[in-house]
Every structure is written in structure tokens, then in C-alpha cells.
Length: 332
Ligand SMILES: C[S@@+](CC[C@H](N)C(=O)[O-])C[C@H]1O[C@@H](n2cnc3c(N)ncnc32)[C@H](O)[C@@H]1O
Image (cartoon, rainbow, N blue to C red; front, top):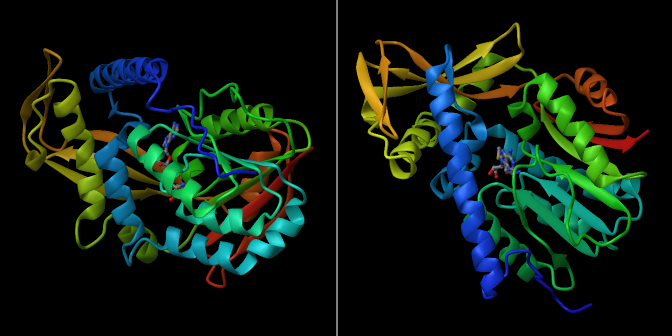
């Protein structure tokens, strides 16, 4: 088959340009609603998916290269070491569907290990980054049809234009940890519906570990993770006529042992009033906006969570230091 980037986004078609403008408008409306609602409630919060505009995705790429950020390094090493074995356990696969694909760098390792693969469908909310990554993957894997889908993977109910065939889902980077347990169960149930009968699902999941390793991964010495968090406020300024002074908020990473998760907050360094879309929000000194969770799971804990949505374990791979896990699941 000829190399094909038969994108759902083909920029040269007028209908595609109109669809892109409509998507952008809908995404800005969803962002406005989430920010106004999230800043009005107590405790204040903004959903983590809004961390990923073009600037946020680029900053996340920088995070993945940090010494302190072990998840990318270890998950990559697991795919390098066990790619062939994973492919053998997966069996024949025609279509790879990736949720929250990001740069897709790790995906290349999986694609290389799956010889019969025909179509790759990456789903991500960060449009410009997704298009670039899809082009890169398409160039790197001639013969593979790449069909990027811009959207919220928690709300993607169908894969328009996807061919028939055996499907493997891929959810890397422990992005599933960003979801609460209830949202993760709902996501896994929706993924079961999207991927369909007899499908397989490979999920990268961060393991519980010492805080000496965990905290620096979310609060690095060079302040890259802080810049990633604070970009959320800069995005509000850019897109929602906000006037956050990003020097008056601080990135804070802590571990909530009861919930088994890292929590990220932006703490107000002073008492201040901020305006967004014409509305005022008063912050007391120390008041926080909750921007991200990163849940950690032992192997049995994650297998039990996946089972609630009908996913049965095939095998789990972990590194020698028990930092990260890769779970292969199949639909029961
Ligand atoms: C933690 S990064 C992981 C990226 C990549 N999978 C990796 O392992 O390097 C999360 C990715 O998921 C995307 N994302 C986050 N929430 C999303 C959502 N609700 N729907 C679609 N994409 C989402 C982000 O844009 C980002 O690319």
C-alpha cells in the first residue's frame, strides 16, 4: 500500500478548514465554561486537559527529556526491551488507536514491532501538535495509513472512517493517571466500545514509589514542570481575555497518600483579584487552583480497575526498579 496521510484534517480542503474553525470555536467555548465554572467553585479547579494547547504540548515534550522525569524514559525502555514479546502476545493487528498520542515517539517502537499494521489512528486534543506528530509518523512508517482525530478521548464515541480489522488500543505516558478512578472506569468502558469485540489494549501506568523519586518528577530543578502548569494561566490570558499575573502564582506538587496520587496546584502568592471574560475572581494569599492529578497504581490495583470495564489482564511488564508498568489487556 502507498504511504498515506489521509488525514481527517486535510488542510487543503475548504470543508476541512471550516471544520477546523468550528473545532477551535467549540474548544474555546469548552475552555471558557470550564475556567469560569472551575474558578467559581471551592476548592477551585481547572481540568488538566486544558494544560495542552500548542505551548503546553511543547512544554510537556521538554518535561519528557528531564532527568527527573522517569516515566518517559522507563516506558520507552520497556517498549524497546519487550516490544517483540508484546507484539507476540497481542497477535494480528490491523489498526492501532492511540489515546492522548502527544509526540508519538514511543508509538514508533510499537509500530515497528507490529508487522501487519495497516492503520494508525492517534486521538489528541492538542491539534497543531497532533498534526505535526502524525506527519512525522507517516514519514517514518511508509505504507502505514495515518488518520489523526482531534478530540477529547473521554468523549470520542465513534471513529469516523476507520476501517474494519483487529484493533489494538494504546494509552501511554500514564495519562490514565490524570483521570479520577470513576473517570478512568468510564474511559475504559468507552474505549472497550470504540475498540470493539476481541480487541487488545496496551496501557502505560505509573507505579507507586518513594516520594524522593516521585516529587522531583513533578517539580524539577529547572522549573520546566512549573512553566507547564503556569502556561494554563497564560492560556487563559491569551484565549479568554484574562489578566493573571503568572509571577504571582506558584506551581505546587504534593502526594495525597489517601488518594494515591500526585496533585498539582497553582497557589496564589498574594491576595489579588483576577479578571477572566469580564468576571472578577478574588484570591486570598495561599488559595489554590487544582490543575492536575496523577494517580499511581500497583499492578493488581490497575488490573482490578480495568476489570470493572470488562478488560482482562494478558500480561504486565515492569522495569527492574518497579518504576513503571505496561499492561496488556483483552476484552473479556
Ligand atoms: C501526559 S501527555 C502523554 C503524551 C504521550 N502519550 C506520551 O506518553 O508521551 C498527555 C497527552 O494526552 C493529551 N490529552 C490530555 N487529555 C486529553 C483528552 N481529554 N482528550 C484527548 N487528548 C488528551 C494531551 O494533549 C497530551 O498529548
